[in-house]
Length: 311
Image (tube, rainbow, N blue to C red; front, side):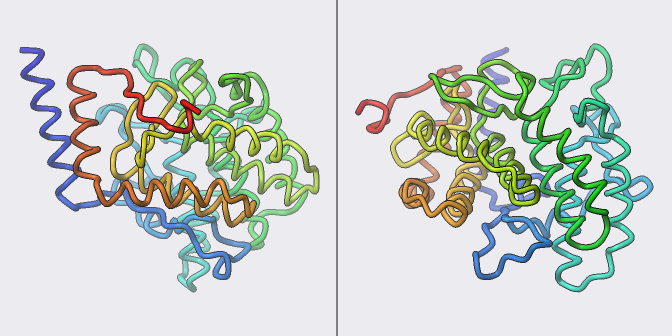
């Protein structure tokens, strides 16, 4: 019976992958070209996230954890806010909507600088029991800095919020050590090490240093990221995390777009190399998605197809 359920799940995953339909949670966030970037918008085109398909209460998107537990999920709220910034930049009348999100985000920051997830007691989740997320901290910093740039938040209040957010993000609550390199974790689960989550956190750190002029930490973590990229490489595809979970097509595309963003920010050719390599992999997405289904079905931890790692 268990094998049957796994097979059904595998086929449902394949069907979702190749249906070509992108739901709200899997919209492509394309890298914004450097010449088109504005101080008020994010590095990825988040406009689609500014049209929430679900329930909204007092201007804030409601998230149903595990499809059951009604809550406000920080990452969902922040993505929605970044999407509204895109819409505001395009001339849409969403300033009041954006202000509601900003007020909510500021009101939900704890004294230690964290945005925690409302996971009901007894519900199994990575963010249960008050854990914190480096990705959430980074997204919040990026959102608040842009709200200041659009005149919604004073410099003083922005600095107060992002400084405590950044300090927590760089604390042991959110950072770990991955084969000798410092790594900001998406979830405070030791060793999980999700690539895209860490990169979103780093974008927040970049925004913090640009806003405050306090440089140094982004360079340290960004250098470590470049050294770690081979650990997330699977030929012309990529791993989602350090556990060796193969990416879905959505996350493969997101990794490509993030490589574009980091190349634009740093000019380092390493990001350009992985962008081209993983973009090539998208041409053979069917093969890798099939492999991912097999991996999920038989709980295969990882395959080694990594020239960089061997070298």
